[in-house]
Image (cartoon, rainbow, N blue to C red; front, side, top):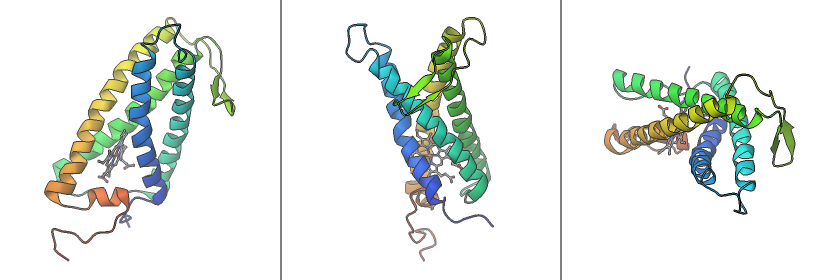
Length: 184
Ligand code: HEM
């Protein structure tokens, strides 16, 4: 049987990632414009990489949680449910590719990624020609695509909540409220 709500671990990871992703996007855009003499020139990319590795760990945990706990049944018209499933799949897929391309950019030179000096993620080194440049371009455009889809995703969540008045958003916040539609 499908659960009524997303599991607390799924909800926790969803909202933590919903904060972290725009922060990483903003940080990424800002740090690429820094000049060599800025005091953030080295620390901003270090922070971006450390947070990116933490995001990758959260993503893997989230896949396991999805596999383990499942998800509540979709609400709304069939086509709308299909569109939501497609957007969710794309969000997961884009995130995976963004994290992979980020890894390829920063490990081309063979240096591991130090995550807040807690631990190191080993480098795979140079795997193909122009690795950092190609992965960098992909990383940039995939990130913009992700942000576009996130906007669509948020609009969908707001529509469910405010127009359809169903429980889609409550299942992700864990807030139990009587269905406004059925009036019970
Ligand atoms: C960077 C930001 C975000 C990302 C990457 C993201 C990603 C996702 C993904 C992948 C799912 C599918 C979960 C699953 O089935 O495993 C999901 C579900 C959901 N998200 Fe987000 N989300 C973000 C921000 C938000 C925000 C800001 C809201 C609210 C305004 C929101 C509302 C929801 C809701 C209501 C669901 C459940 C949808 C359903 O069960 O049909 N999300 N999100």
